[in-house]
Figure (cartoon, one colour):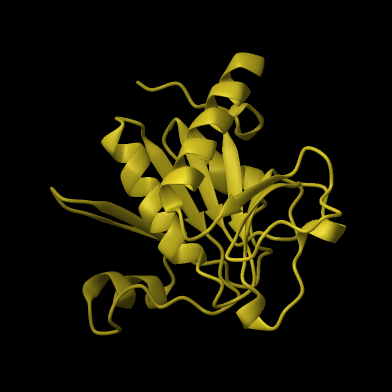
Length: 181
């Protein structure tokens, strides 16, 4: 049986940014690169929208709508659990992380208001201001713009158009976090 790693002991990094900044594209590249290195990566994607994960006519959906608190769909290829909140509050990030299997890294997509280490994806073309000037949890920014002159000390500025460099930074970040654990 695998030991459950409490959320506070997990290596977690949120990839944040405004809509259309390229978070998912960067995450796809980072996950593929880390997996190719033999690392196990979990992802938690936060959404403000209602989730419909299965077609309404499928048995799992029918059972969930009939009143099941959770429905697990299992196959030789994957397992999915759909939990109906039915008015209960959204589980905390720690509760969500505690449900995941152990991994070398858990990446979060979104979660920009949560107090966790963050890699911000920032493009001026989105027309939205960056998060990093007002969020000390942002430890790195991947941008298509050059670093500003008044960049906060210790904040890594990465070239979003060079995803290999972002992956290299992430590898170094993981080594640093592991050394301090």
